[in-house]
Image (tube, rainbow, N blue to C red; front, top):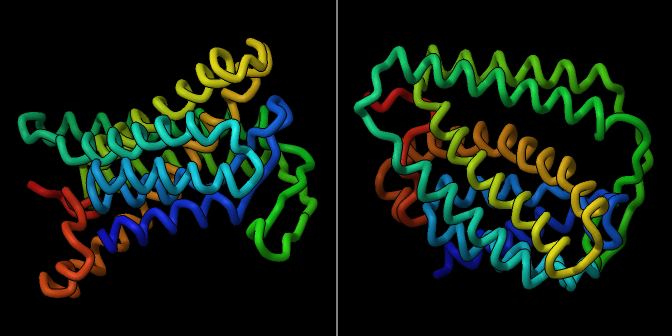
Length: 258
């Protein structure tokens, strides 16, 4: 229970501290909450992932003045955390090593391509970033993102996933697919919530989709390396230290399990 409460607070804080208004919707916002939702689900499994993802994200919606999204967020982010935690523990051993490596390479190419296209199309140009919590001082920072940055990021992600899949963890592709499945639930859920519940119209609902997809992809790219690092640290600390945080990890993201 204590660990669940801690991760719920982490999800809420991560979501609130970094926000970027989405012009397509009246109260939607881009955030880094997906990073912590994925980390929580990959480390702690589906149930803690579901609770922390749903409740933590719901709290942040209320605190940031987007309470109309809170009921949908509770369900959508909860389902997202559950799916990521559940699927990431289900990688089978019947697939050959060569097939796993090919899968990881293809997934890396897909993620790199999507990041490059979405970044160049929707996340390049001038933006106004809000840093801070609603109860404290808030800083607004103006900045510009060049298109070339996203091309470089997409290429780097492809190389990184492919390299990990071939060298240290051939099943990294399954972990990425698990996170993608949770991300798909997130951006599909918000599209339906915007359109069917909030009634903001089909063009505006569809206009938020690229930002939600980008949020899921960026969360994936940041969360998986962090999770791998935490698991390596816990493995070195030994079973006694791992027991303090509960059942961390359902599979090693950094070493081949076979």
